[in-house]
Amino acid sequence: MAGSADSGFGKSVTRIPVTLLTGFLGAGKTTLLNGLLGQPELRGAAVLINELGDVGIDHHLVEMVDESLMLLDSGCLCCAMHGDLVKTLRSLSDKSSRREIPPVTRILIETTGLADPVPIVYTIIEHAFVSARYVLDGVITVVDATHGEDQIGQHQEALRQVSMADRLLITKCDLADRQRRASLSRRLSILNPAARQIETFGGRIPGNEVIGIGFYAPSEKSPDVATWLGELAAEASTGSSRAPRSPWIQRTTGERPAPDRSRHDGRVASFVVGFDQPVDWQGFTAAMGRILGDYGPQLLRVKGLIAVAGSERTPMVVHGVQGVAYPPLRLTDWPSASPFADRRGRLVFIGYDLTADDQAAIRGTLADIPNANAAARIIAANPLLPTRCWLSQRQAPAARSLIELDGWVVQAKRFSRTRTVP
Image (cartoon, rainbow, N blue to C red):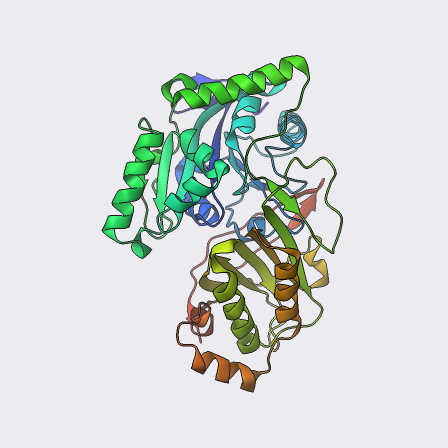
């Protein structure tokens, strides 16, 4: 192991503390993670990012400072709780003990937005190998101030993420009025009165607010938490694997088949749209504006890297949540890791109640992107186009380095100032 690590409880322990960062799709987990990683509390931390979907995006956007980032890209952690998570923690422990990587003082796991945190928590506190070497030091749940209350009511995963939390970080407060924020706060207090609620602005929060919380105590949460963990314990003792009761994800993509072991199915589906050629930026903006306008509430998240005509060497990162488009970012270079090594643009859609016809329509719209002149007319005729911000706000790239190691993506990066460019 990496030796003793200060857990923040006032004494040194031999087990490495683990912080679980969860929250529903589009809540802002990656933004908050970026804000945390430059702080002294995260020095020596290893970061594990779990993404659901056939093309990982988020791990390419995390700004690391000479530390390790690892992508768990073979499915949702809650589906592979006895597989990939244990395997990765075991490998990390072995590499650390052999001094193949720097000493690890903390693990931070960012889950996919559709992850049920219950199996992940259960694995960390009950699995023999893991619990002997790691200790759960808190569940941090990110909640979107603009969409969070609706998501809790519609998606069992969002409800469980809130109920399991030690800290509730409320994001996008600048986009929600006081009445909406107060309503969300009341709902969160009913579901998890013991969790401290913290409103965040600009994705920034002091590291000491989320690090060193203390040993995870299910008994201090709502009775549902103990029930959920007890159900998993009963399943583990009998060897059964009962299907979850929530609306899980169904992975559909033309790029590669979904793994058979995925437990997700139902009303939530993910699919990937690829682009063989660079796109005209205005045309792409118009096409995506139409898609977000037509399917907004059903699009839980849209995120991807896009090659833009005239600047193909540096991909554009685009992001939308339930009809809202956020300002794009530009990377300094394409990731060298698969699948982006071919420098083809890809968008990952995660939608709710999207039919096969809906998916086909979205693919058709993106296959027939208007030229610059037609796009200009569309944009001018639609002053409320969701993607209008994409035409005026682009960020300059930050320096990055990227190496591949044993199926992980390990990034060592320095923070750099960014500036807006026309």
